[in-house]
Image 1 (cartoon, rainbow, N blue to C red):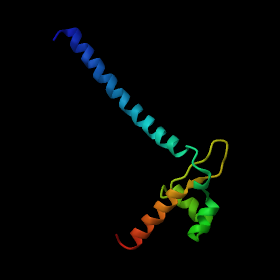
Image 2 (cartoon, rainbow, N blue to C red):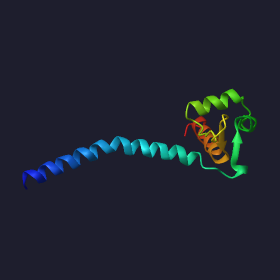
Image 3 (cartoon, rainbow, N blue to C red):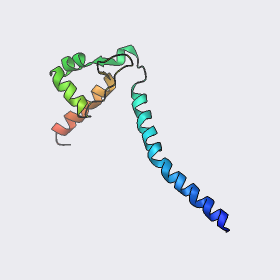
Image 4 (cartoon, rainbow, N blue to C red):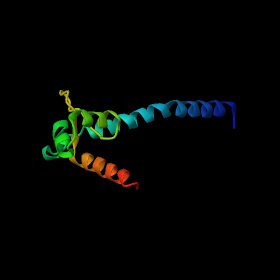
Length: 102
């Protein structure tokens, strides 16, 4: 292997290493974008609807969202948090399982 090959290989390795953090950021952004896909209208719930269904306060729902326990999204051009029924069901199932000691 010549000197030019060694330099090229070292440069490629450095380039790949430099790209890793960017790839991780792209993956994180993609996950957030996936959560923002327009769901079916019957699938979307407001914090008020979630609070009513779970028999808790809207503040509690917002707290669960802020703590990352309940997934949510903010539709483009809006300011209010929304969630999906499936995410609420998952959250309820996790809480039930943890309260039963499973």
